[in-house]
Image 1: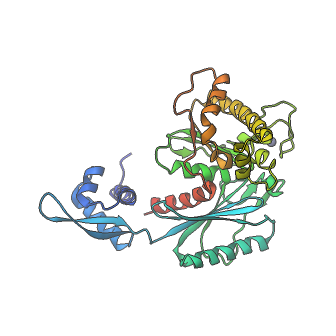
Image 2 (image 1 turned 90 degrees about the vertical axis):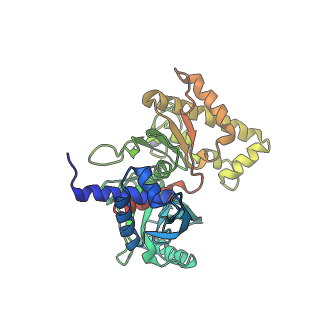
Image 3 (image 1 turned 60 degrees about the vertical axis):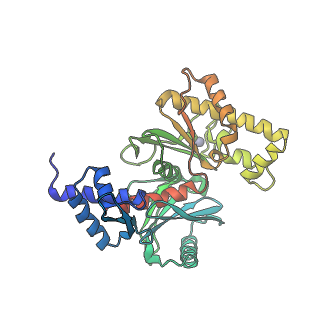
Length: 376
Ligand SMILES: [Zn+2]
C-alpha cells in the first residue's frame, strides 16, 4: 500500500524527533545523513518541531564547509511521565522525561486498601511529590499505573489481583477531578516495557519478573504479545506453571505452582525484617540456613528457566526484585539450567534485567512517553 504524503511526513517527523531524542548536539546534515532524508526535508520538520517547542537550538559547531552548523537537542523540560507501581504494602514512583531518562524514583510504604480514599491519598501524594520537584501537574503527559494482576485491553478492569485481596475483578476508576490521563498495566508487562525500551535488548524474549509475585511477559519483534482476545493478558502467567505436583500451595489456591517456590517472598520472609537485601546480606555473611534456602531457590528457578527455553527457544530476561540481586550467582544458575537443558546454553539465552530499581514504575512511565512520541 502506498502511503499518503501526509503519512510519510508524519513518519519522518516521528523518526527525526526520535533521532534527536537519542542523540545530543546533532546537526541537520547529520540527521539527514543518518536517516537518509534530504536536508530540506529535515530542515522543514526541524522548524515544525521547534515551533512546538519539542526541540531547541543549543549552539553552533564549526563544520567542514566553513559555515557554522546549528546544534539541535530535545527540549527535555517539555513534558514528563510518572510511573506508579502499586503493591500490597508499598507504592513505587518513577519520574521520567521525554528522553526516557529516569530523573527520580522513590518507594513509600502504604498498605493497599480497596477504597476510594486510598486512590485519593495516592493522588494527593503525587501532587505533593510533583510540587517538591517544582513541577506543575500539567507538565505530566500522563501517569502509568502498574498493578499485580491482569488489566484488560479496555483499561476498565483488573483481574486476578489476589495478592491485593481481589478475588475476581474490580472496575478501575480514575478520580473525577483527576487532571492527568491515567493508564493501567499489569506489573510484569510494565517491567517488561522498561526492558523493551532499553538498549541492547533482543528483539524477541521472555521477561520473567521474580517479585513478591512471579509474572512474565513475551516480547515478539519488539512488541509485547498481548494474549488472546477477550480477557486480555492471560499469557505470561509464569508464576502459575506447575513445577512440583501436589507441592506447596500457591496464593492462587492450587498446588505446586512456581510462585510458591520462586517469589521473592520465599527468601525475604526468612529474614526478621522481611527485606530481600537482608536475606542476601545474611547469606553472604555465611548463614547456612539462608545458603540452603537459596540453593533450593536456584534449583527450582533453573527448572522453570529450562522449561521456558525449551518451549520458546528465545532469550529470557530475569527481572523483578530477585532478578536485581542475581548477578553474583548468575553463572551458578546457568550451570543448574544446563543440567536439565537438552541443548547447549547459548551466550545470550539468559540475561539479567537492565532496570534494577522500580522497573514496573519506570516501564509504566516509559510507555506513556512512547505514546507521546508516537503522536508527535
Ligand atoms: Zn498459582
